[in-house]
Image 1 (cartoon, rainbow, N blue to C red):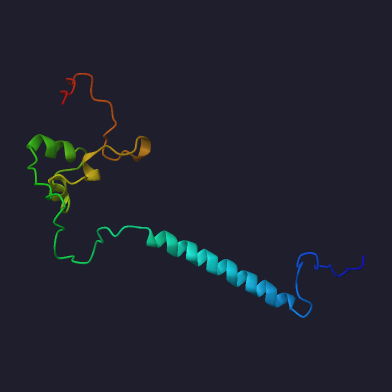
Image 2 (cartoon, rainbow, N blue to C red):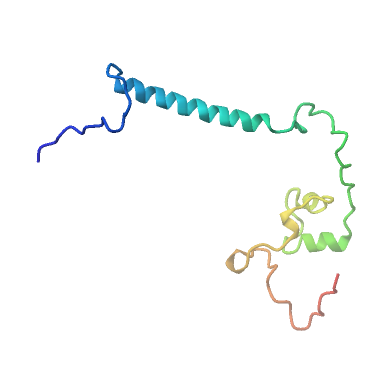
Length: 134
């Protein structure tokens, strides 16, 4: 099979006789790129200026809510958070369990099955009373 040159004259209808086809394609790419940039700029110009974090990292914004107060943990809550941890607790596990209102994954049951290293999902003994509702 012999390769034949494809006649693209139908694609470039209206080209003046002396214009270079590569130049026309180059100009089309430039025009489309410019239109895309203008569209992006128009979208950015339409946004309102809001609060920008990080301009004054040493100060809390005036409209920000106050930081949460530290809540003291009861001994029952600490015992529940340290469920399955051998005594004495290693490292700073006691300190982590006693943190205030922060979310700490140490306090919640994790995965079941062979990944339950602390025994959160084990069935309680039959003689144990049911846990109190909170």
